[in-house]
Image 1: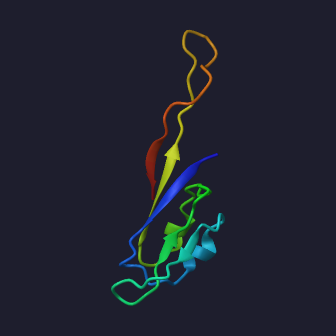
Image 2 (image 1 turned 30 degrees about the horizontal axis):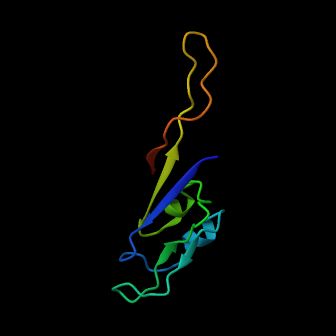
Length: 97
């Protein structure tokens, strides 16, 4: 399963919560603290790493405050006609737009 992480520019976020409604994993929440403009921005609360990097939150954000990174795991490829080696190669971060 894919994993991802969300980076939110909290100083630009107005706390409209459109991203919260769009998030199928329910990993976004309103912060308790206010940003410099007096809004409660949205923050990522994902202790279980449930974010899949689907980028629905970034798609619906009217102010473009959200950047999503999806961790890409490359599968081992067979060499010389042999079966792939068990295990996975290190994950790479890929920005989703």
